[in-house]
Length: 161
Image (cartoon, rainbow, N blue to C red; front, side, top):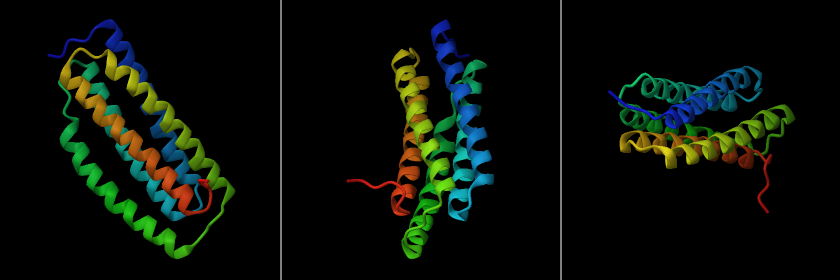
């Protein structure tokens, strides 16, 4: 049985509420997006966010985290999906849909915020398994941010100077 301090519990509850927000945003934005590639990206990330939510919920219920195996399978699927939409984007050239750009930029900002929350929580955890699980989740959040950035950049919506 996993024993959490009051502070650890508070931090995990915060991250759980952030994950819930991400799930809702990704699903809602997938319905609003015009580009099918972006819809697929948002739906894929919503599934991963749901896994994060479920893992945080397990820990809050006192269960040892079991995220690692799920995350590795999800990461492989994400890499394959990312390669496909990047190749399609390169073939299509620049697409500039201001609504899709807004949705994607908002989610990129959200991912940055959530990643920073995990950064704080990781430093506050006493249980090494919990800390390792949060690090894994944070890496996936950062990967989501990278995917969003790459989509924006490859479609001429985020120019790096």
